[in-house]
Length: 169
Image (cartoon, rainbow, N blue to C red; front, top):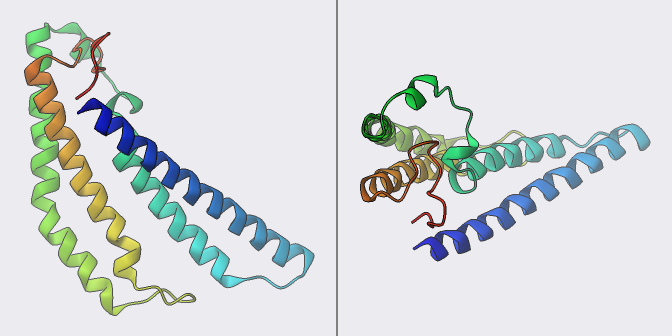
């Protein structure tokens, strides 16, 4: 299971690098057209913003680990391992329930946007915002997996990272 996750994460990182490179090149093209040729290109702004949106949610869904997030864990680190396990399971369940409860309305809102298109490139906005649905499903799956890892004792409760010498499943 860990090798499958590593394989998928490597491919997700490649996609993110591609989006970041495209965004950078479009940004350079925008600056060149605006200041060198004095002829700004409107589509570059729209495409850069769309790529930024996709890059943020793609990276959050498939590249960042729980340990990559800023945490205020003074209380968490001051309690017993058993209490930490309870904290992690309750917080993961709260996140799962929150995202799952919002998912139907989120999907409804995204599909509503199929009637609208972006101003310059005329990209359907449901395509633009569909990345949020992917992100929401990935968050639900990641925290469900975290509960399983905590329950099986694979995750080190001292910091929330996988135990030394053990692979994340």
